[in-house]
Amino acid sequence: MSALVCCLLVLLILGFMIVTGLPLFGQSQAMDLLTGAWSPRNNLYGIAPMILGTLWISLLSVTISFPMSLGCAAYISVLGGHKKATVMKGCVQMMTGIPTIIYGFVGVFLLVPLIRETAGRGSGMCILSASLVLAVLIAPTMILFFIQSFDRVPRSWLDAVDALGGSRVQKLVYVVLPACVKGIVTGTVLSFGRALGDTLVALMIAGNAVQTPNSLLDSARTLTSHIALVSAADFESMEFKSIFLCGAVLYLITAVVILGARLIEKRGNHE
Image (cartoon, rainbow, N blue to C red; front, side, top):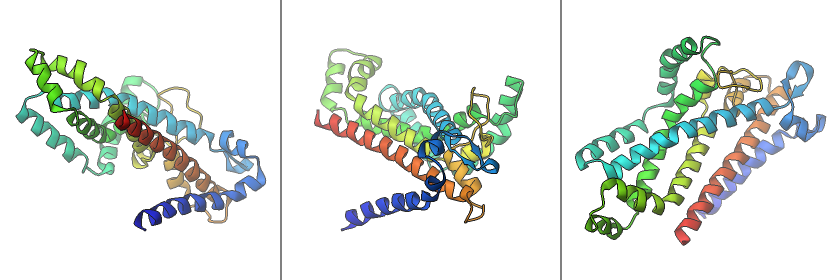
């Protein structure tokens, strides 16, 4: 019954967002809303700039965070000594408890001026700045998931490498990583879903410009930050109703990502 209630709640939330956003479909075509520009003064409520901004920031943050997280997890589980690995794992676990707003403040006062001075143009509040901060934010989740995957490797396999005189690097490259490919992919996909749903980092650092980004130094607005900014508008306006379409799109993207991760994990466990 508990599982059934949870499933129904998830479907009800999705249905609520779709029904509330239906008035938008009554005035224009669905593809215009998903691919058009955002200009409420001209009765244009397309959310394409926000979708592109979300994908740019999320994909770049995962790309930056992945090698860092994989290296940290490999050091903690395989390469590092027991004491150092324990301390490092404790630090990673502590990072998961740091509020998102703290990462945002650090990004605003330290990273944004650095990006602005280095690039020589723009305000520094751009896709690159938001992606770097978001990469640090999602790294602990990715690291802990990778560690959990590495720890599932049968101990007998690791003992066999030691018996053959293999080094820790050989153990990692030839045994652990091949055995954990499915887990690594699943952790990366779930971290991507975490990046999709973040609001504060994009709201504080990305610049919130409703435009189609052409470079990493351009400002952008994500779906989540758009919802946060427009939620104070008139409840009866079409501008306000558009945030439910943003929520539905974000919901569907996240659902596809999570279902894909679960499918990969299930297939890996079956193999």
